[in-house]
Length: 463
Ligand code: ARG
Image 1: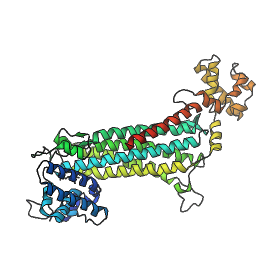
Image 2: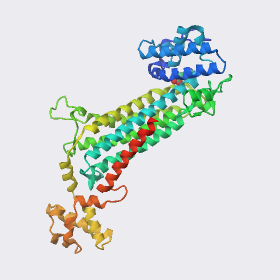
Image 3: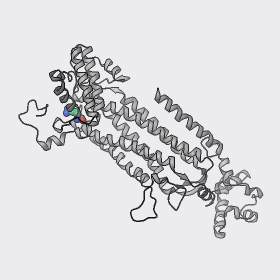
Image 4: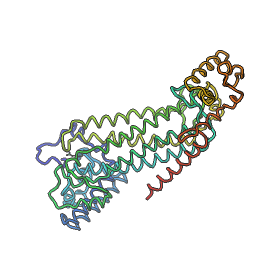
């Protein structure tokens, strides 16, 4: 019979027990549950709520249980509902009655809140490390292709030439914002809830500051009811993960486009591409399609938890158990997406000749020609008009700008002189020489700044 059947005359119905159990997924909280219980046992002894010997026996029992789980010999039982009860029952089985003292001055409500916060803290550390690796792969690819020019797009129409490095560094900026969101989430996750009891606090002389020190929490929660009912930190992680997946998905989409025959800007490494079961000529970008596809379920988990929580009265309600599967899946999906994308970015090959050609085509220098006329005294609006006519004319002649004669230029504006031919893709890039612009000198600066930021982040995470 389950340990929690106290005043009941019957065992739980099998289907009902399966329905309510969380052990199939919350087993993975075990390292946090055990770390929390060890700190709790120490605190109980320090406060003379249990004896030092009892505390020692409990701690040794918990340490053994951790080994059993790590070795895969621990028997998880559905009838024991969740990870907390599974570990406690095994503790009592191993060390006897004294094991029953561990749950003094504690409830599963503050226990699960603690476990989840410890898990979140670890998840954020792991996420930040993966984000850094991913940023490094973007910077490495940009550095290895510093001269590569591609068409920049608006409305997916060729707009103005840019450096590939500039395009890649746009993603570096997005990922930097993601890092800052996860760090911010950590501040609010890093609060000790233990000591809140079921909801009202506990009637023992506990030492919460000691617990916070033991478990390395910089803060302790200030309201017991909030502490057992709060899952904001999970929602914040899921929101940050949703935004981050949106960024990865946008890059994934570009990689899908760029690797198509139509664009042909890049070629994926064989190790990061898939073949078709029927069409032998195909090299498919399935990884990036899956990154794009999995973004949907990460958004879904955020909405699911917000919906679960929107009408919950204080304090703990069992609905809160629904926080876990979506959260775990969010972390797993984000980390694996980052990992494979990092590998894919690190190994792809850029086809610089195709991109250079594409950057020069499609009248991508039209803005530069308008700017040329502005420098000769035309208003920008008027210049825009003149160049529109020039584009129309060139289209009828099936000529590129560089193929037009000076006479043809001068037909639309007498301001055109021989120096119009010095407007090239390169001059267009060099001209965009402001902070944040695509001029090669600016991009070189941005690259070295990005490298510094990654190194700085790495150092600060190590101490
Ligand atoms: N498995 C539960 C959860 O994930 C643990 C807390 C149970 N508390 C309770 N009062 N039934 O939320």
